[in-house]
Amino acid sequence: MTSSTGFSRRALLGGAGAGLVAGAAGGVAVGRPAGPAPAAAAGLGSGRIPFHGARQPGIVEPQQARVHLAAFDLAPGAGRDGLRELLKRWSQTAARLGRGEPATEHENRIAADAGPCSLTVTFGFGATLFDRAGLADRLPPALEPLPDFPEDAIDRARSDGDLWVQICADDALVAFHALRVLQQQAAGTAVARWQMSGFSRTPGAAGTAPVTGRNLMGQIDGTNNPQPQQPDFAAKVFCGSEAPGWLAGGTYVVQRRIRMLLDNWENLPEDRQERVIGRRRSDGAPLSGGTEHTAVDLAAQNPDGTLAIPADAHVRVAAPAANGGAAMLRRGFSYHDGLLPDGSPDAGLLFVAFQADPARGFVPVQRKLARGDGLSRFLRHEASGLYAVPPGAPEGGYVGQALLEG
Image (cartoon, rainbow, N blue to C red):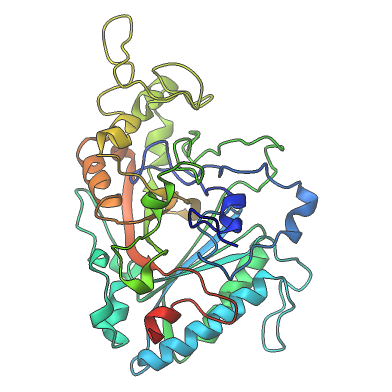
């Protein structure tokens, strides 16, 4: 059932996924989603999120504990027909696994004794897919490559891709099983390009009261994420009539792998860390006063006349008011991939942000962050991608059907 505002019942009940620092694109956090309090640990395995609906799952639902992000390139000769059959297989499998149904006889049964664990699978299309699938005339104008930003260190081997997949679940084995099945089903049609894994707080770990999560820098993050109950939520996150017909009701997602320079960050005194962010580390309250959810007062001054929130503080530079109202639905995850050759941790944020138009969301905010955000000194953007995320699949249909059969 869909409400008059265009939100499915699933979306309205699920709340918004959180994902980043109080600001936006250059942020470094994983925040707890809004919405109902998390389920008790005993009920984690039984959580079911329907695959079919007006919108794909994994966008507005409460954030799960585990994620696998992956990209695939269409194999030579696969074309439009091969893509169609692959998306049919993937959609059927995502729906079945989301219901918690047993694996087929040809699948690894590593998750056979687990429930669905709130599994969601979300699919997106990269710009390069359209030429390779003979769909160049259907390429959305907003899917143009992201610009280069100052200080980017992008590894193109871990960026972009024809097909983007986000797999989330509250159990690591359930998420990995889904990834392996989709990889096996892609054989002969699409080739894995890159894959990344991340984590967030397990639902219920902080009790039943809603608590905003912390990132690997120890900061409470996700406070200012857009919420479904806000009247302009849909306009910020989902495509309207300005998008091609096959994408109406869908969204765009920007993914970035952002390494945190944790050794450098942790050597800062706590008060210095707070001035870089613009919030207290203890409770997430803005340095201008109040509690976590108190509106940031960018004009507030200290007794000595200096700005309470420094000029290069993350919350100031990233504030929607300072960026023409630009906002995104951030749903990022932390990652830790061991140690780098110099002994520092290879850890940070898998930034995932959904938005109606990246040219009005991610791009202008990231440009501003790259120029004047004090937090940027402690971050390295190492991988990047932009994808069009079609609307959901109806019962009996598949994701991308309107594009491939319209």
